[in-house]
Image (cartoon, rainbow, N blue to C red):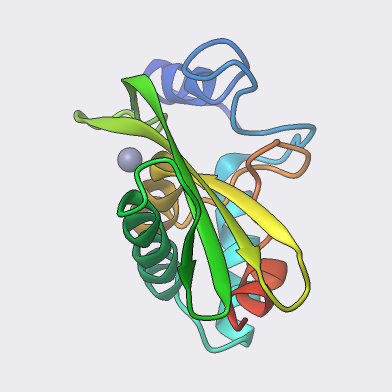
Length: 150
Ligand SMILES: [Zn+2]
């Protein structure tokens, strides 16, 4: 498929070293639209929408903020946030910046933890984008949905 110059610029935003050190695609060579489509189908099979997942993650990020940078207990989970200086634009190219806040969310039951950023929540909510396979901040929708059940 031939991309327009505008699309090429947007595609470039996902590569390592443009917006984030690691980029957003990992080792995934699929087109971004195909990544989004497959993850949307996975979620649909589970009866969930990207908005449902984004709401859950935002809830825990906000819980974590209450502890400043100390761990906070929230139901079946513990969450700890880290604030970094600065803000990031969205790789999809619309205007606006996202604070660099990372959250580490751990299940009390299994001890399993996941990491996600404020930008991840935006990418999921607005674009249905969970990042490419192999990306350090990729959140597999199926694993994530199971994890968030507690
Ligand atoms: Zn965006």
